[in-house]
Length: 262
Image 1: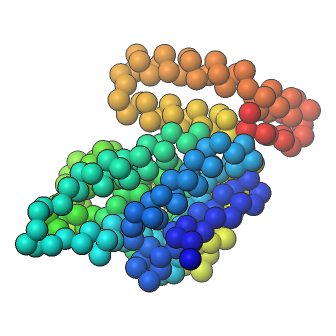
Image 2 (image 1 turned 45 degrees about the vertical axis):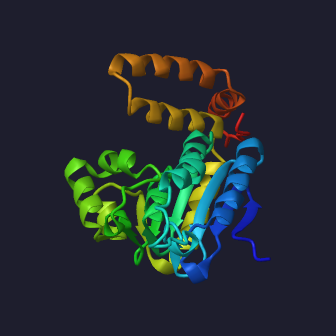
């Protein structure tokens, strides 16, 4: 049986490839389960210092596989909230809570939950031909997989409403201009550029990077006064880390640091 998620670990980077190319890597329940297990592995494996998520074939992810819904027009209405609660919400929470950098390498179309999955990663690097489509409105649905939370924060309220209500294709170049993603590269350079970025991050003080990630997420909800307390608490933790000690020692000795993520 073909693995629906392909995994490879090298130089501290776990690369997860969504592997249903014949369905543009759209999600079914089994692919959700495989991805969840790999994310659990990434969280508990200290040798994994960075996570890279991409797609096989010509697309990143087309969201939910509608063939997996088996909607019978004459039958009872499906409970899509069950799917969101069982699969998509835990996926978003795992990515947000992962104390390591997460990169999305968007190699083609990212639609529906595939778009919100990509945009929910810490850094997004996209091929020039890639695109993002908030396709939910075309089916009368609401953006999920964190879409309604992240879109206004990434694009602003006006653009978020336009993207969500119209469901038009947004090019990778436009997403970069709007500040929604980190970088656009030529299609042929995507794999190498994404791996280089992931390997760079994996060699950094990833314990501190995880704290940065959590601090910035907390800032979305906090007042300035509350966030100053978060910074105090996280800086206390960072200052007690082996990585901080190594960073200072290496700086004073004028040598390259050897971080361990601890």
